[in-house]
Length: 432
Image 1: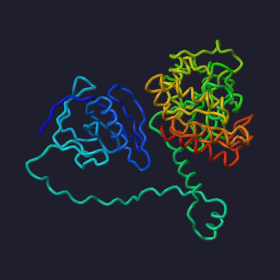
Image 2: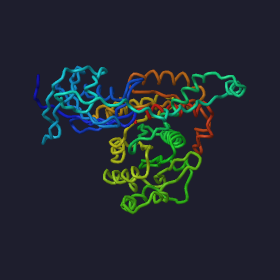
Image 3: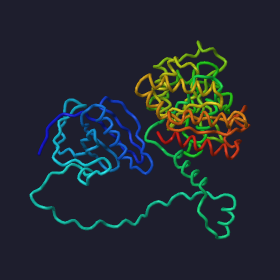
């Protein structure tokens, strides 16, 4: 039986273990699989959510490393391949003909996974069996052994890695990922002195050291941004005010990858770059309008694979709002203190009510709770429990004197602190 109707259209581009979903309204968002779920099942689940929201089945057009597919996804998760795919004038509505029984999400039929086909009057000629490949799958990166396990391993006694070593290896794999296109993380909390600069620097160090550099820490602050004070200065005393007039040249086809060097400050040990603000100027002397921010973001996306924003405290500033609009992931730092945690909670509440993209950031935020003193563990537990049901993840950073003041360098941290920042960075990377 054939059914001819019109349906809203959504798109999904699958790249390895991640995907980008474009809703019928044109909103782009990342899709991440959970647990052992295949990324394509996550895309189908997101399309079913859209069908429930609109009250009508959604046509899903997917492309990726397994070919292009056209499916009709119902609100209850039923699937059917689309046998006829005309070019419609309306990009968000298309006439389709469904001629097969639907399958459920999670039970995609073999026919639904294949490109569109036409029935032939006779069976095709038998094909020869596929040639075996001579290239085996890549072996997993071995997990580093430490302590007595390493000693026994050197003696020929092989033991499985510890749970901590396996977790470290899993987190390292996440923070080492390369994405198709530039990704952005906003580190935000409306209160000053809660660890935004520290969090920005430590996340940038983790991603750059494990993923091969090309990471920018951007001091997006109108007033007294201190990222430049706590990181190393490069060969030039330049700030974002110097980069802005040079943006057209840096975006020109003739610009080279090294041209950005004179405007940023490289961190030799931690391998990321810093785009400084000028803490000596008043906010009125370094305001950045939305259009200027967008141009700077074009420059950053051309030269870097990952940008981490150290936000200011003025949540009404144009550059702050455009930072939120441009970010894939939100990280909210707080100290183990009631005032810091309340400020973080208020920010999340405001974002949930701002618009759809901001609400998505708030729901998938990672809250980072730092022990500012060794005795703060009771307060930490209360804060973690308070945020646990409202965000995607809550990570705890133990007290470390190397974080209190002075230069921020990853190697200066205690081993437990380095592991905690690795885990926090992995939590944020899971949504990129």
